[in-house]
Length: 222
Image (cartoon, rainbow, N blue to C red; front, side, top):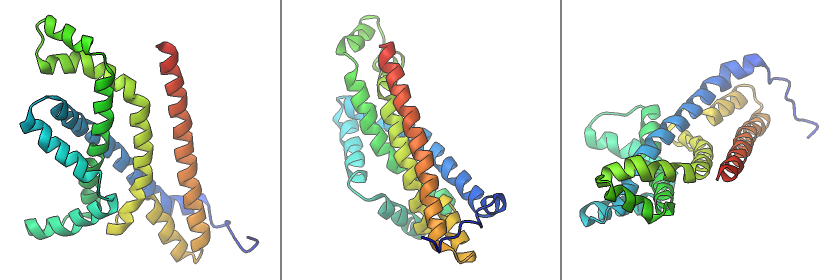
């Protein structure tokens, strides 16, 4: 431990190597979260619709992606899709698409549990007022389901941020890649990886504490 030297960790180091990677990781997390929740909600509604033509494909999509490691999905998309369409795909764009499609499967299960947590009487009341299935879900059920599942959705988003480090497999410049390049250029790989671990810990721990406080406030309001 006495041989470790962190004196290179300055603002110039952070700006040159880490900042762009951090911006990419945060952007990827936000895009995949929004897109995943939207697509996941659609998948959840399809599975709960009672229509086999909608429920079966949605269930197959969710179960398939939840059974495959994310890094394999990232590699398959990055390597196979360009082969099928006949042109390469940028690593960053590939990461945005892959993470959104993959996370949708997990957000779908969260939203499905949230929808099922809303008492059936709420849905029946909507039908009694003349609402359609879509109106009842959009105006009555989904707002309550989203509120019930908000802490879980945010927890999944923290996991998503951690998983962004897997884009190293296709060469995208994320937070971990920035530290890796810095450690290689400055000949301080151990210190660079330790700093990367510290960065991930501080960010994820802070977000976890915020989610815990939010969950406590929601419970108090109820």
